[in-house]
Length: 96
Image 1: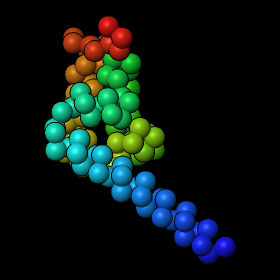
Image 2: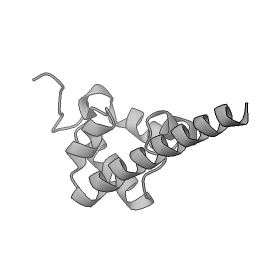
Image 3: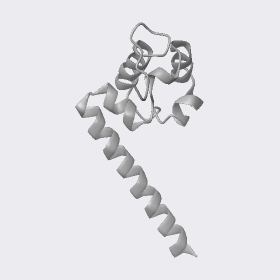
Image 4: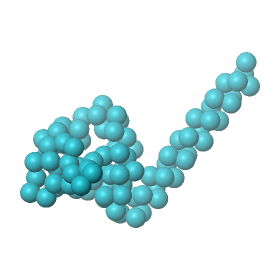
């Protein structure tokens, strides 16, 4: 039984480390479109007020996996998404 628990812990640790490495790599590239894409966040799918709501709620940030980003990168990502939101002057619409 303890071996089975150990195996689950090791898989969780591996998954966590892999995700952290992926985020670290994306953060050093400082490419907001790429970071948004990696997190499956499409700026044009939401209005700016919706993006603001997501980034102001810990529950929503966790759902969209932006809670693990640094405060600085999170702010840059939020700015990018709002700047290109569906109701902005420069929307980025998926599929066009």
